[in-house]
Length: 146
Image (cartoon, rainbow, N blue to C red; front, side, top):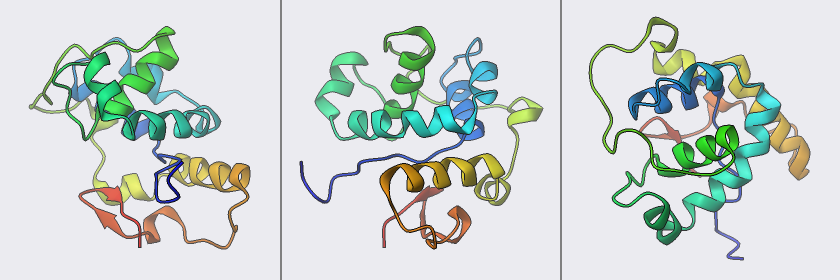
C-alpha cells in the first residue's frame, strides 16, 4: 500500500446524514444521523478504501460524484448490507431539514466528530496530543493534510 494513501476518512453522523439527504436518500438520512460515533469510526477505513478506488466507485455507481461517492456507497453498504447508487446523482438544492441545517463551524466543533476522530486515533495508535478536528487545516469543508 502507498504510504501516502488515505487510510481513514473521518466524518460525523451529522455530515454523513447531510450527504445522504443531498443525494435523495430520504429513508436513510435519519438513521445515519443516529449512528454512534464508534460506528462511524468503524466505517472510516471502508470510506478510505472506496475513496482510493475510483474504478470501483464507477463500477458501483456509474457517473458518481467522486467527492462524495465513497461516503454515500460506504454508508448505504453499512445500512443495507451492500453498496448501491444513491437515489440522485447530483446534490439536490433547496432548504435542508432543520436538524441537518448546521453551519460549517458548528459541524467542525460537533462532539460526535471529535469522538470519531479520538476513536480512530486510539485504534491506530496515533498520538493523543494531536489537534482537535476544528484545529486541522481545511480544504472546502474537508480536512486537508499539512
